[in-house]
Length: 288
Figure (cartoon, helix red, strand yellow):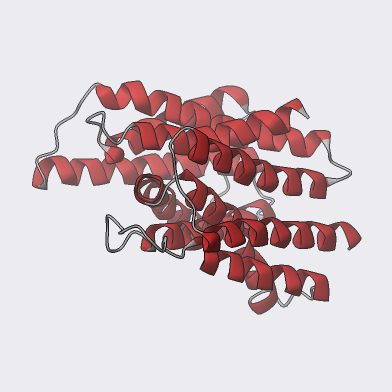
């Protein structure tokens, strides 16, 4: 259980750290590069990475989109937590589980239960209510609601691609993850090179101060989540449900209590529907 709790804490802490960096003079693109460098080093040190047995037919059609999406989603996440808050961003991220389920139905022809369809319905309603603007307050950015929507779509697509990586058995999953981090780092470095040459961005040591803990938290989230799944190998639904519940509830508490985020009635309905959706989907998985 400690691994699951640590994974929840690390996941929420990523959003908190991104929110705290907004006014510290950091550069999100440089933060992302440092993040993936740290994650890459930790992956190499902690997992049994065998680079001597790399097959010639790596799944590039999955690896390349992942390497483009992973650095991009961090930038989107940064804007989301700073424009609409941790609560809405965490709900959007957790509800992204709807997308791999829809992909399983529409692309892979998987048959799912009625209960899971009901859960999907609640999930889509939760997205609508969560992204509704507050009735009385003006929105500080006219496109603010777009960012949690992009978080929802981005993490959903990333989840589908990671599931495809898991199906590639020519390499251990951890070695595939190592390659994903390598390519994501390369893409983020190319973006930074472009921004320094064209946008006149300047390297700053501040990005190391915040990028290193960001990489530690991001990797730790993955590491502890995998450890929890191994610990609860006979009941993965427990990990799935508690992870999603934990992130939404802890993110809500931190957002409301520490960052004074305010939720409208619609947003509270969205929070309740998100919990209902995860409960129904987890129950459906447990019964199958």
